[in-house]
Amino acid sequence: MASADLGSAEWERSKISAQDINLLKKLGISKRPTRYASPAKSYPTPPMEYRPVMQSFIRLGTQFIGYRDHANKLEENLAEANKRADALAIKLEQSESARKKAEADAASVEDLRKRLHDAETSLSEHITEQSAREEAIIKRLESQSRRFVRKTSQEYELEDPDNDPLLDALSFLEFHGDEAREGLAEAREGLSRLYPYFFPKKKEPATFLALGKCFNPPEDLGLKLRQENLKVAVEGTIALVADSQQNVDWTKVGDTQEMETTKWQSLIRAAKPNSKKILAYLGCKPTPAPSSSKPEV
Image (cartoon, rainbow, N blue to C red; front, side):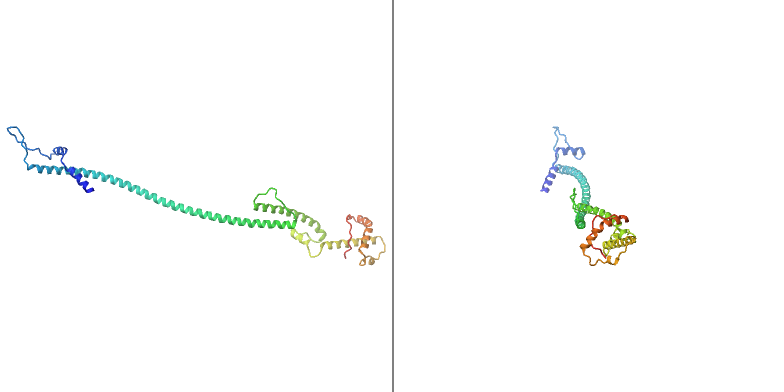
């Protein structure tokens, strides 16, 4: 179809038109026919043998001009095609650069996505570990608070809780810690006051733990102190009797094995009025509570 159209176009261009004849005349290719004078002043017709040759020559010239114009058009089209090819090459290069940049960006985005996923996973694991650690700390704090309650029999309630299990457990332990510190301070002061009476020949320990251990020996310190006081009282009574220059059989006085408790209590009550005078003389204040116990030996 394309070949037929091209042949038809070439055939149309090969036809001789008046414009082609005028162009040949300008170029000096065409010759005017020889005119023969006649008596009647008429121009003779050229010979027949010249017509085919001229027509072929004119046809060739016309085809040459058509081919030249077609070649110029082809050159223009080729130049335009080269420009378009150069433009396409530039666009292709830009597209290739854009593709490489897009691939690099995609790789960077994928790397960022992977790093973000790893960070989220690490954060989730850290949150899980932190939650487990907080639960363990809460259990330990609550266990310590229960131990304080068992030892002190004192429970507390939070007036303004933080609604945070960890902070609330810490607040309870702080209350018990304050109570323990206050109790330890009071106990140390009390034990320091009692220490010279129980251990008159020893130096008081520097730490509270050592001081407390001194008051928790295998033997009964209370019984030992009462025996020491009873010894001092007996010695003082004997000294007062000796000072009064009265004869007393101390063997019979010290024999209390067969004495009944009721008799002992009645004798103690009978001796109170005189004991107050003796204690006042010795510079001691009598205790208000009566003693109904039997003497320890």
